[in-house]
Image (cartoon, rainbow, N blue to C red; front, side, top):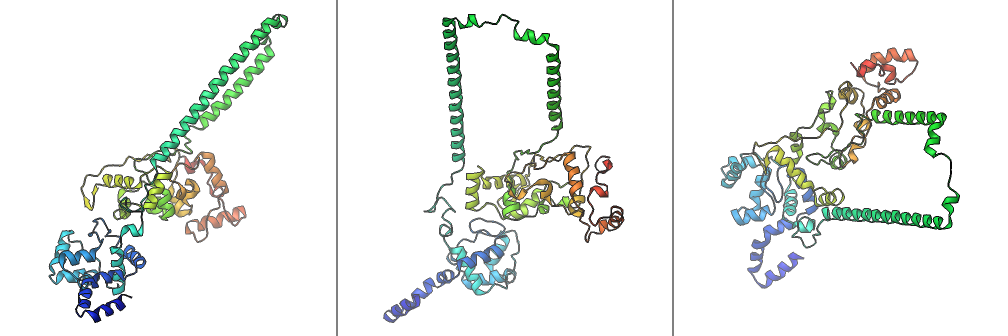
Length: 437
């Protein structure tokens, strides 16, 4: 359609076609690209070092082609050379290439020689599109922006709950007053009719009669002793058992997003679980492997965090940056320790080795820690008591297939017990010295 209009105008005004071509040729190149393909290519090749609106390892790329043409007079051909082999352009002595190279700490840009002209066109089309067109929730300045309802909703719910509790308290107080008034009225009627004098019991008070009955006293004493022993035993058996413990951490970390939606392997962060007694606390450097580029979540995830969990995920990421000592793309060196609150804590006299269970036995993390991938805030899922561990050892078959660690002992014990599969208990998993020594 554009070409037809151009030919018609060019036939009527000889030089108009040339003017239109020179003015709009570069912008049409970007518009001809496929935005959806460009987004996929950008995320695959560029997103680790570039953001559209924020400086990262490299410069922000929003409208990069138009800005280079307007500010530097550089055409699309220069941009193609830079994308495919920036090192070659720098070594050629190109002024602007060397300026960018030095401005960003002489960090070399990867060469993308495999990208075709159409691929680059698609990427540039994605960088030139209006962010409000892609997502109306990307900025409050967008026409279709709707302010997320987060803290206000939670606060309103809290107020409504307090009103309900207050109304119930008033209702119970009125009911108690009504009962008192009814009792007084009935007592007055009874006195007027002389019922109290006629039915008055002349025998001993109940408590005196009870005290004089030694059998009732003995039975009552035994009952209270047994009941006290039951409650004392129940209380003592819960000491050190923190099932359901869900502390508030200094930096909110959503396992639901990381392990669930993003599918991050538990052992990527807790890598020492493979080779060590403890699972370990991940270093903040592990976090920054991803969050060096991921400085904010998507608007949809942010809105969900505010509405469902009353959490500002972007603010939590900023806490991480402050702790690491990261200002934009610069390391300040002013790191701060994060005082994580421990959730799972066995008694000192109990020995547990993560590597023995995770690496040798192949036990999944969820077996003990529950569906962590579904938890917004991690809590202690299992009781982790001695009885809980013993039951697991009695019921769990050892994975001996293609497991050289168990080859010899499996041959011996399978003959002893006459079974093909061995439980942990049959391999000595109930010996006291296994966990207490």
